Length: 102
Image 1 (cartoon, rainbow, N blue to C red):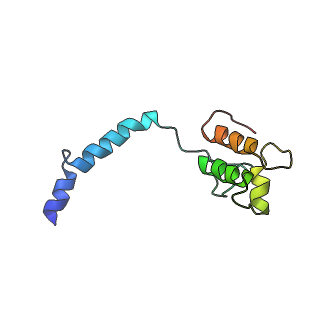
Image 2: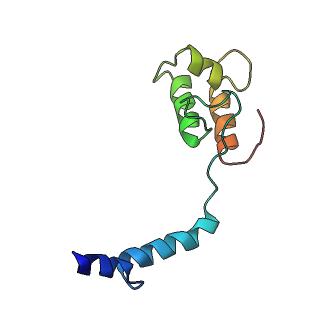
Image 3: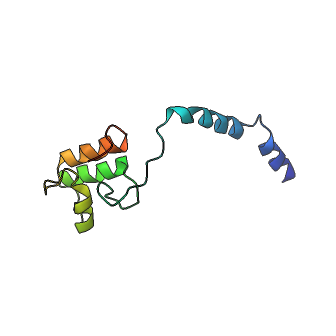
């Protein structure tokens, strides 16, 4: 067992090389989503506005799923009283940093 731990500690192991590569790529990846104040846009109620929220709204707008009351209020980011593809697009744009407010 000790040999296994020694091998993991060795900087030349494949897992360490993978970890180093992932750290190097981190500069090119978007940062973690910012926590949400309130609920607008956070359709899955996880505290963040992400691409997942946009996908949920898109599926709801297409009639594939039904949202509950809280989700409907969160999804209507265009504030027009209707859940549409526009809401999904706005949430997606927010999630990827293209816009900063709804």
